[in-house]
Length: 180
Ligand SMILES: Cc1cc2nc3c(=O)[nH]c(=O)nc-3n(C[C@H](O)[C@H](O)[C@H](O)COP(=O)(O)O)c2cc1C
Image 1 (cartoon, helix red, strand yellow):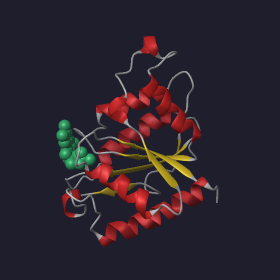
Image 2 (tube, helix red, strand yellow):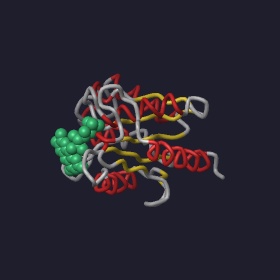
Image 3 (cartoon, rainbow, N blue to C red):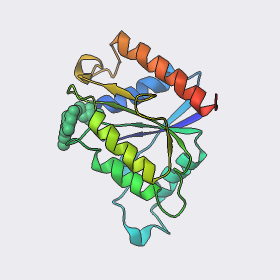
């Protein structure tokens, strides 16, 4: 099984990128997890959508070929980061690679909000893209006060409750992918 992962932060020591890489290792026997290079994706320009930059072609090809997609994102100003929205806008046009794609939403923030407001907005965008996302409450992961649960320097997820919760959510997402 092949799960393509989009991380909404370009920060070097990003908690959300740390989470993606921790999942890459922790679930390596369940699925392969490739991580998108959002930093290479230029600003969306409708003039270029039929002949997009190489980085966009690669990004869309990965989504097309994936069995499912994880979107792991921080919350910026109660919404999703611009780099993520930009990438989703490219993916939404011409060959519409998110149609029926199974997507799981995860996020870590340093506040008690745990990216919930951003996740609700992301769901709205994914509805426009006609992605297949389980209803709110069924499958998302919201990590609050990430600085107490993920080591910013080593990238390790240090909180056992978070890891156990993640394990449960991943199991249910795999069942969703397999249509159980
Ligand atoms: C521009 C900006 C806006 C932010 N807005 C929010 C916010 O609305 N809610 C929140 O919980 N955290 C907010 N934060 C704090 C983030 O939770 C924190 O920077 C987090 O570490 C970002 O994720 P990352 O570590 O993956 O880069 C904001 C941070 C930045 C840089």
